[in-house]
Amino acid sequence: MWGMIAKITVHPGKRGEMVEILRSSAEGMPGCLSYVVSKDSSNENVLWVTEVWTSAEHHQASLSLPGVKAAVPRAKTLVANFERIAVTEPLWDSGRREQ
Image 1 (cartoon, helix red, strand yellow):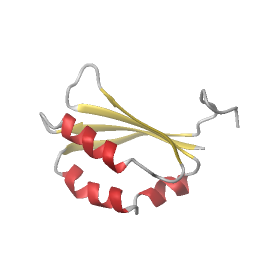
Image 2: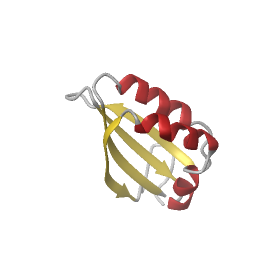
Image 3: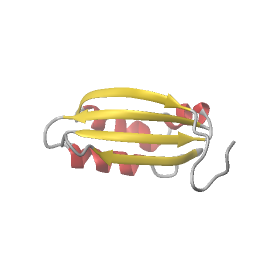
């Protein structure tokens, strides 16, 4: 498995709009085991995205999906900063056994 944790800082007042873009573009992504979008409890302009994929290749391929490609230009206008905090190698989750 392959994972990533990202911090997305949006322009003031745009968090809800960004959540909807992420939600709609994340549907039906082959190889995506988990895609969690969380709001930061201390900064209303920050979102955390935690992703788990069967492989890094599946994540990379998702960037070519029509829904994702259509979302990117809309999302870019809302984002003040994007940080890839960590690339991870998930070992276990509640629905799977240790790999």
